Image (cartoon, rainbow, N blue to C red; front, top):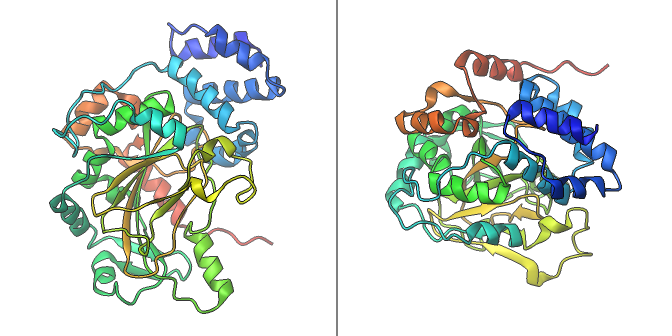
Length: 373
């Protein structure tokens, strides 16, 4: 695809768009110039037609992921920032951080350099307790055994359970006012857009309990660790993306801290152990209410819980729905403040869709998959 076509597609999304000559020069100098511009063109067409919501989009775009290294993903997000220039004001109030002191202006730079940053503000104990109470009736599933338990049952059995238990239906979480306020907190969104290079799209809210791995068989232990993201790995989910982690329980070195290899977004294709020294491995601990923004394209894992338990909330933002692997949120769950923000910044809410569409997608995903012959 030629640059003139890229510019035409971009102007279809933003009539005022002008192709930046530095961006073009960088693109033209690439060894894989043609393949890269083809991916960018496909992305812009998907932005115009919303094909990233169609069945099969995720699988059909998988080959394009191989084209986008970390550097080229960032380069692509720079273009998206010019196509969609709207920004959330950094001084805006609202959400759950609300009236606290503004987050440091350098926080975005810290995340770009290191891959993560621990926020200086925590949620209060009362807010964390209120969030936890909302989980009592939700269903959690153990990914290894397939067993399900209600949130209240997990709390009652927390001293004997094993492995990780993940929330079944993220619509439940997105509809909770406190979690919605956190996901859409303007101060968080402002930092996210500094990192992503464009206005962040709220694409995921997830939650899981983690307990000690009580499997005695080494193979089963390794399987459980792999399924529960407890081995070093890198994510490659969207063009650029950022995750907000919230600890709802106290997390020590024994209680499953998030482990991150500082600066490893730049080393996406390097092999762990060959490229990193122990001085770059960071352990994120903290009390209930601790918040951290993390680019999980860098090497990371959740350390296995050795004692006690951990309850974590994960909220994810992306620069584009291209490569979309997630289910949508129900737009009818939005409260007054969220609706007002949506009227001002609709792109943030691109993954919020009509209730009948969301119900259909969840129903289809619950149907048994045909066995391969």
